[in-house]
Length: 257
Image (cartoon, rainbow, N blue to C red; front, top):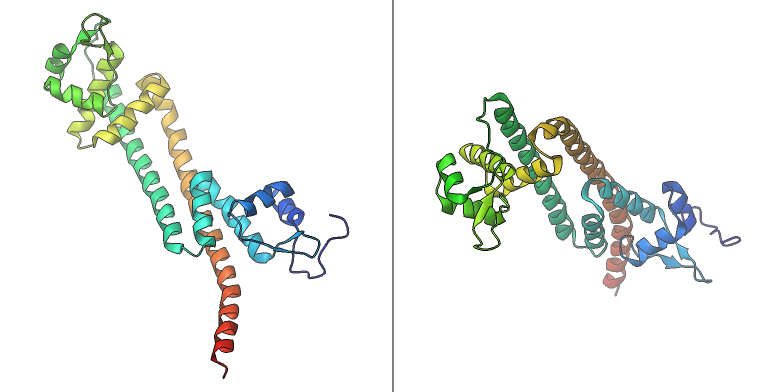
């Protein structure tokens, strides 16, 4: 790249954009190739010539990644670069919906864990029970437990010979949690998320310690979305500032006799 630095101070090379964000020049070129950055003009020798608009586009993309992840951020930037702002905003809206759903799931986990850890529970049998026994214990129909299984809430094993469901002590715990949450008005998909967290933590007791960390992660993600939105707005304003004069020039040329 030596000797190719453009004379126009407003023009940047791949390496100039890369250094600002701790990236490689190849990463910047890949972003342009993938449509994350708008197409760059080329010098007579074939080098890409980036502008301040590209710098703002790169800043917006990297900020969006922190809140929305790589796939969604790529969709947002490609939509913006092809002029489809509505599609970009729909993707952003979808990420916010997912964040809100995660918040509601966390609220459900905290509520359920508080009930389970604060109540005197009957000691559980360490043997697996059939669906009829579990349904009677919870005061629900077996069909309800089968519905919860289809929703991903319960994962009972099956007897090899008969195929009958057998609910382990952990399955019984999950069913009790689900029953509590259903009485609290939570949807099945939210309950499935709660139970997934319980299984990942290894039970309700270890889960308690991770709840504050989980909420902190959601807060960090929400703040990152705000920063990403601000950077994207800056890029849109910079891009519009270049497009408007070009559009006015084209209109004036078309209106000449």
